[in-house]
Structures are given as structure tokens and as C-alpha cells.
Length: 353
Image 1 (cartoon, helix red, strand yellow):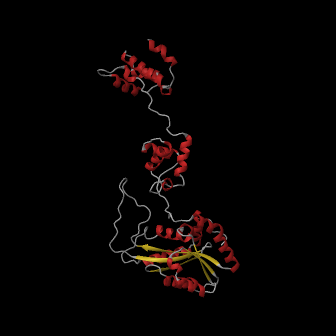
Image 2 (image 1 turned 180 degrees about the vertical axis):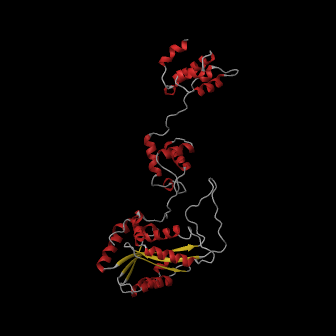
Image 3 (image 1 turned 90 degrees about the vertical axis):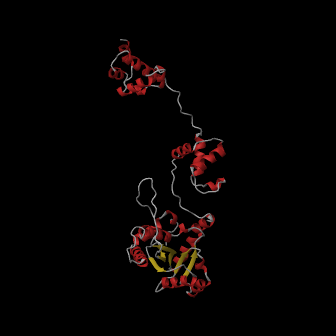
């Protein structure tokens, strides 16, 4: 038979042939099978799977059909619309910048925003799906961003890290003083932090009770692992801040340089008067505005809320203040944990204090 003369020149695996050769093999296989050859023998000789033959036979069967149905279709692959240089430009847009810098009125990158910018800059129109594939190709993934206020002053932040804080450190050494970072935070019994288990594709809804407990707390922390805290009710005012400072300074032997944020209560006249009356035992230093990430005490609150009530809800009759006090006390007893807050990249500027 003619087919037996062709078998020696066939490759072992028919899937490795180019498109035109595959087309020839398909037509040859169907023709041979139609002439009565065994299906398994034909496909084995061509290095192809037997079940594939039945798919081909189904394609050519029926009125108006024939071997032409096995012809290769013109490839649908297209040349990339963006050049390598353009792709690199897209990466630079998205990595480290936000849409506001390109005239959009929102701060988060979406596929639609990237698509619009590509059209605007390159006059190339891509589908949203194509943009998603492009971003994945560039190693970019959708992530929940850290929120930072637009009012941040990068120059002031750099000055604080490069000049101001090193000067505070130098002054504290000369005075044999200590440096602490201070912050306040609020706690609620119905606070929701982190993630919860739920059925795939269905976002869980947390129903909060009508009545809830709340408490406020202040703390001060230093790089050597020391930790001080106090709880209080309501918001912070100047007089209360002074009371808390008095507690912090009680029986303190060394002078203290205390770094705080620009909360109005921290700058009240009553506070300035108290600090002056300490005659150098207490000095306040103010962080740049809208830069909470420069304060390691922020990491204390993040840890407390992530591991506290949100992970172990209050039992009936249990008081939130007692729970928060207990948790903060445990943090203070763990000097290794306290020191770890100073190892975060955002506070890497704090050293030698």
C-alpha cells in the first residue's frame, strides 16, 4: 500500500511538525482510514493519538464537508502592539507613581487607567484584558496600598531623617538622656481587622452591635525595648496630655526627649508651660506632618489591634479597658517584641539611641 512507503519518513511525534505538515498529516490520515486502514495503525504510524482521528473524521463527515475542513487556519497571533521600550515606559508609570501625576482624578492604578494612558501617550488601543496581561508580564500585581496623605512634605521628611533626628540623638547623648516615641490610639470592641474565612466568591458582612465599648490609650516606646502606656476615656485634650506626661515622668531619673506628632493637643499652651517647668527634664520634638510611618509607636498599635480584640472577641461581661490594659502590659514585658518595631524599614533612620 502507498501508506506503508510513507511511514518511514514520518517523525515519531506528529505534534512537533509545522502547521503545513500537520495539515498534510491530517488529510493523509483521514484518507487512509476512509480507504479501510485500521485507525490505530494509521495514527501510530504518524506519531499521533488514536482518539484524535475520530475528531478529524467528525469534522469531515456530513453534507458539504470534506477534507478541506482539515485545512490549517490562518494564525490568529498578532505582533505585540507595544515595543519593548514602550512596555518599559508603562512599568515606570505604574511602579512608584500614581495616576494623579498624569492628570487623572484618582490615586489608584486600574487596568482602565493604564489603558487610557497607553492610548493617550502611544495612540495604541488595547483591551482591558490585554492591559491586565501586560501588567502581569511586567511583574505587577494588584495590591492593597498603604495610604499616605497627599499633604506629606518629602523635603521635611528627608530633613527629619538626615538632620533633625541625628541632632536630637546627639543632644540626648550629651545630656545622658533617653529618647522615646509617643502616640495615642483608640480601641473598639467591635473593631474588625485582618481577614476572615468565608465561602469563595461571597464577601462576608460583619454586623456590628448597636452598643459598643471603646477606650483610648497612649504609649511611649524606645529602641532599647522600654515601653510605657496608659489608658483613658474620650479624646485627647491639652490638660489630659499634661496628666499623661506627668505619669510618664514620674520617678524618671534621666532626662527625656519625647518625639510626638503634630496633634493640636500636643501644642497647647498648658503643655508648653508644663514642659518649661520641667527645667530640661522633658523636651518635646515634633515629627513632620502627615508622616505617621516615621513613628515606631504606630507599629505598636498596629500589632495590638491585629492580635487583640479582633482575634479574640470580648466575652459577655468582659471590659474592653481591662483587655487592652492586659495586652499592652504583655507587650511591655516583651522587650524583644518592642525592639522589633524599630526594625521596620519605615523607621530604619532610628539608630544609635
